[in-house]
Image (cartoon, rainbow, N blue to C red; front, side, top):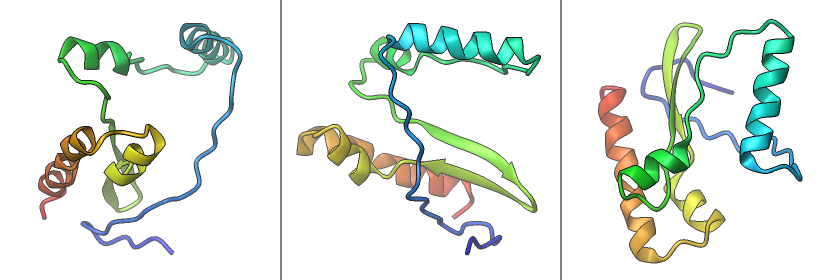
Length: 109
């Protein structure tokens, strides 16, 4: 059950991952072409890796702010999950923990 109370933390454990033999650039181009072919609206694309390199980060930390019925949600992958997924050193993993305070401030906690 998902609570509709603002400030509630919900962890969703299911993410669909579809592997491709294409490069990232090729997969993005294919996705854009499919969106356009179906007359759908593409709002933007962001090259997180390029942005991370431009700011000196080793791993881009992404957050999503979205409107759900009756509430606004801020979502992100937990720092522990990112550290495990990318086998980060303790030093790099520690730098990800700041997302908790940032998102707490964003939701008014």
